Length: 165
Image (cartoon, rainbow, N blue to C red; front, side, top):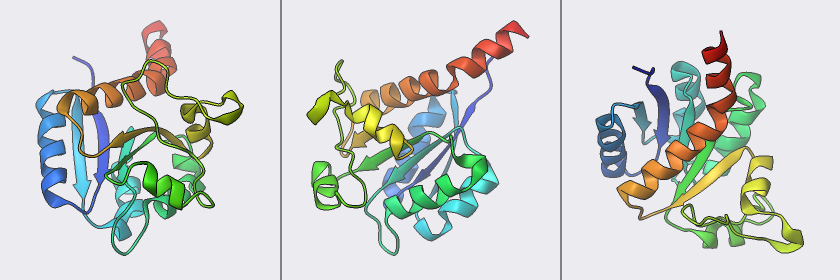
């Protein structure tokens, strides 16, 4: 049996944290640690050393974009895949273009969306250390598909190296 992938989920909605944890751990694929306190984000990431961070953007006391910037400054977590989870959708990103220029995409679309100059949202997101976006409300299927896609993409090389060893 494959090792469970560790996920940290930070969101100011306790009920959503509980539901996501139950859903993901129920698959047997993931071990999930949640927090509703964005001020503890970096400490939690350091403590857990997750394979993936699910992160709300709009929270009281601290913005998700600030958390992303702080985590990416730490050499140990520069390559940590981050999936933004937010209920504000494109309005957040339109409003905060100076801080975070990526426009979210539809996570189930085959073509991950196009931006001016032919750059996909996925390519631009990677520049900010974010590999994908999930809009609230989301379904169980969307959540699982996006997480599995990101895990497969980000840990493909690692898994191949383990198999050849």
